Image (cartoon, rainbow, N blue to C red; front, side):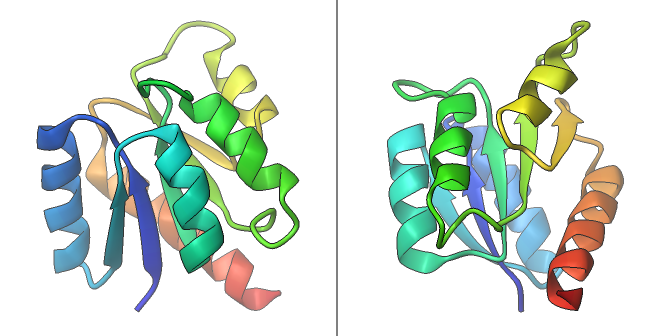
Amino acid sequence: MPKILLVEDNDFNRDMLSRRLKRRGYEIVDAVDGEQAVRLAVEILPDLILMDINLPGMDGWEATRRIKAHPPTASIPIIALTAHAMTGDRERTIGAGCDEYETKPVNFEGLISKMESLLGARNAK
């Protein structure tokens, strides 16, 4: 069962996404801000991180940079979940270290496809 770190500060979004992912067989660990995301990434070494970008305190871009800069967590795939859909936002997100990008509202089937692709590539290494 893949362990997913779900980083989302909005209670409704976190609960909805968490329940849907659990029904698909994923183990979910929640974080509500960037600081908690970085700490949990090091502690639990998840198989994949779903990272909201607009977080209180440390935003998702900075949390991603810190996770990717730390050798034990650098190879963990990160999918950005963001309402940022303007020109250049995808490039900025990928530039921060995210491996994929999904706009909100989340297309759940599209997200699952991206997750499975990244998890499969990681397991093939």
